[in-house]
Length: 280
Image (cartoon, rainbow, N blue to C red; front, side):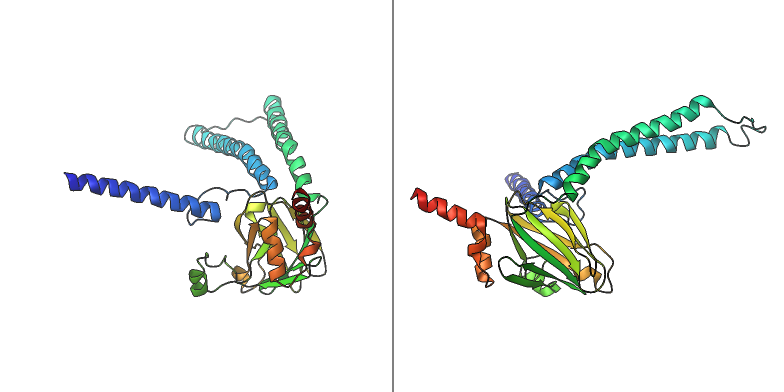
């Protein structure tokens, strides 16, 4: 009896540890077989999820309604039940309903969607500027103001396992970005069409040769976030992941220095240091 109790307790502990591990994995990045969105890291993605949660029930209701109408027509008006079909040209009430109701649904969807589009497309005054350039098949990043440039390549399966990173998402040179800072992202390409996409940030911007596209993000909490190229760009399209570490301003400044850049040009850090010195 005692051994069975211990086995049950052990199983419960194991299940709790497994759940905790899954929660940690979900907090850090994508999880195999999971449903829904990854945890939002920006206010934009929070609104994207809220908009999805608003539209999804509408989609379900409309789909079920149309399916029900089709089933009703197929069953009630089949040849065996109606050997002689009725003939009529129109029904004013039905025509008004199927015109007005869709218009009302579209208005209801448009009302929250336009502010969200404006929030995504209007780049606010940025604290720092990041340039992301797509190549076949890796990403180049540049913080021109700080003199930092890196190339980010996918890790092979063995290196990803050694670094404890998800395969096809982990990279050899992750990008660092400070939390609480508006980062303007300039996206372009050196060769073919790519797309810089970060699900946690609510950002997906096409990288087009000869053109500069803009987007932005402001990370609200520290963490490691993963994205991928989301444009079919060639044979190694699946090997263009994005890895961004959202870190504190102090850690970001240290990273700039590690990469041979000039951290003194990072204004939030300079202001924080000056304030600390004044308080001392």
